[in-house]
Each structure stands twice: as C-alpha cells, then as structure tokens.
Length: 74
Image 1 (spheres, rainbow, N blue to C red):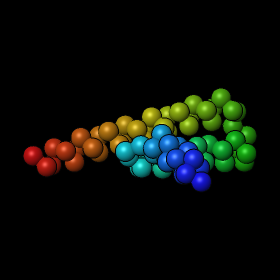
Image 2 (image 1 turned 60 degrees about the vertical axis):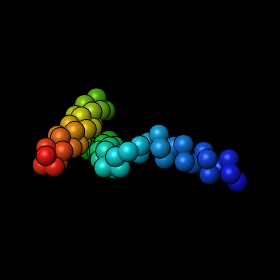
Image 3 (image 1 turned 60 degrees about the horizontal axis):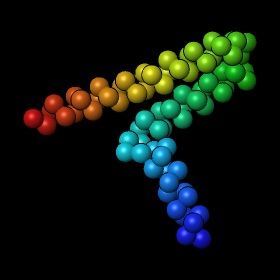
C-alpha cells in the first residue's frame, strides 16, 4: 500500500507542484477544449491553438498575479 501512496504523491507533486491554481486552470482549459472538439464544427487545429493560448494565458496570469502580490508585501 505504501507504494500506491508514494506513486500518488509523486504524481500530485509532479502535476500540481507548488501552485494548484495553475493546475486547475490548465485542467479547465483542457476540459473546455475537449467540449469544443466534441460539440462544435471547429477544426482540431483551431481548438488546439485556442487551448494553447488558454494555457499560456493561465500561466501568464499566475506569474503576473504572483509578482503583484509580492510587490504589495514590500
């Protein structure tokens, strides 16, 4: 059982890491992308580009938000 727990902890640390907000944002963007693929007539390439832009926006927002909150603490 300890191997299963260790395996789960590894993947939690690998995927979530130190900022759960990035992991949640990326998961949300990927879920929206999956919905777009299955329910619209958009091409797979267009959805992939939109998902990539969404992931880039999530990461950028997290970095900017962290920088702004660090500057408020000064």
